[in-house]
Figure 1 (cartoon, protein in one colour):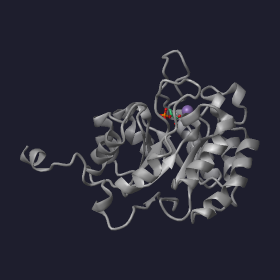
Figure 2 (cartoon, rainbow, N blue to C red; figure 1 turned 60 degrees about the vertical axis):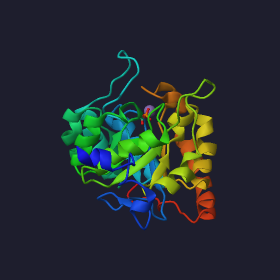
Figure 3 (tube, rainbow, N blue to C red; figure 1 turned 180 degrees about the horizontal axis):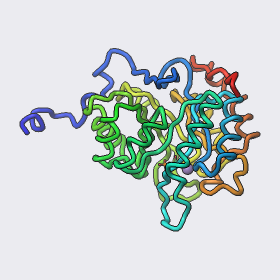
Length: 287
Ligand code: PEP
Ligand code: MN
């Protein structure tokens, strides 16, 4: 107990001054977050079918994404909305990623599913709604797998960093933070994407930071400009929702890019990345 009183800071392992350099988080297939190459995580909100995830994986790999995203366990606001394909979805995601040379990031909702998700993914996503689920932070941390920790919908920067501290305390320091917007009074956009936290977090923590303009805005046509702005602000990567047919998506269609919109974004990004000393991953030859 004494230790809790002796340490005045609410976080110490994640602090910028805990390390001489900023951390680079590497996935087992070599994808990195925090290096000169940006991490581009792209894919549908939910895995819906083998065909849907495979077509999307092929397309995003061809355009230069290096991580396939897709939810198999979905934290939906309404219990009547599509809840994800679960274990079957994880298998489809894994197969599509392997076929197209991509790593996998996918959300883990429950401590009982950590092992299963680790078996299918290079990286576990802890979603906004679970950012302060201490049991999940500990269990996911203890798995040793890299973790993408989204900002809670109303979490302060300090609360977010304390959540990351729980993971580092398990001995797992492969944590990447993801800004995905916070709640505000204004419903013009789904959330308010807080891009100021990117340079701010780079001052406060050594952990890499990526941006999710899809959930951050909720509006597909805002995703390209906000992705560019995020990279210009120093983000270490992006998380972007892409769907073969957004109008008929099972979740988050309004914010999902079509293949053509994703291609347009990936054409525009290299020049912006170069202006801040970064570059995009090379497009996959396997695609
Ligand atoms: C998602 O990535 O599809 C998701 C549910 O995100 P968030 O936790 O940021 O709402
Ligand atoms: Mn989504």
